[in-house]
Amino acid sequence: MDFSHITTWIFDLDNTLYPPEAALFDQIEARMVAHVQNLLGVDATEADRLRAHYWRQYGTTLAGLMAEHRIDPDAYLYDVHDIDLSVLTPDPDLAAAIAALPGRKIIHTNADALYANRVLHHRDLRVFEAIYGIQEVDFHPKPDARAYAAVIGAHGFDPATAAMFEDDPRNLEVPAKLGMRTVLVGRGRHGPDELAADFTLGPHVQHRTDDLTGFLRSLV
Image 1 (cartoon, helix red, strand yellow):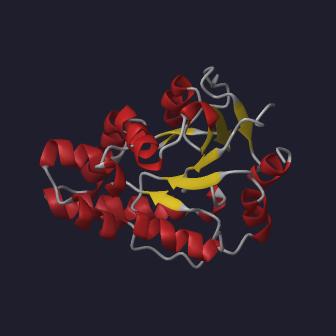
Image 2: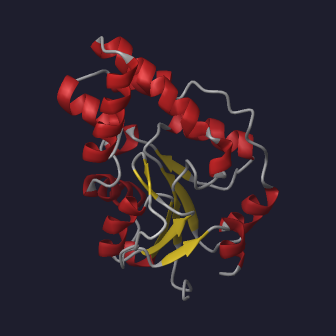
Image 3: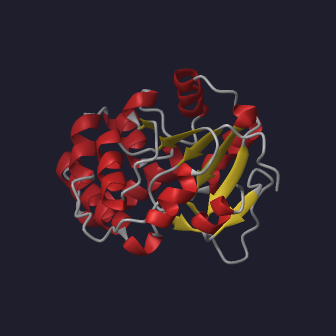
């Protein structure tokens, strides 16, 4: 497990830098359904179906709504991420493990940077030099290759010297093709779908861990 050449460490946010048991996505998805209901004038069942359909087809629900309904993305992002974060607690061990990594540490999330900052504040993870949210990549969500290209271009690093940590295996395919080290955090999910117990991860998932702090500690 050679990470000695890595100088840029890229982390997803949701369900990567906090445990999935926090269930923040339960809150977010409920707000997504309500937003789609109000926006399109459909009932909750249809709104939930569209939420999941767009997530599978476009990478995020927002990307689908923008493509098919030309919605205001900023209003959507503010609404769906206006959630209670009190369940999150500081994680000094994770903060120390990330801080000990040699090189630059950045966030790349399909959420917005304002929400990401709120999550990092509640987790007391003050160890990142940049946050690339969906606005910073011109609303191209992972796994769209343009999202990664935007981060690489803006931050100016060689992907062959970078590592990506993600909870969604879809979002590791492009990084692997670009030459990054890839690490799946947790059991993985495809959009709103939990992976089956017998699901075989592809070669783009080079490493997998259920203990991000322990994994990072093993690298230094």
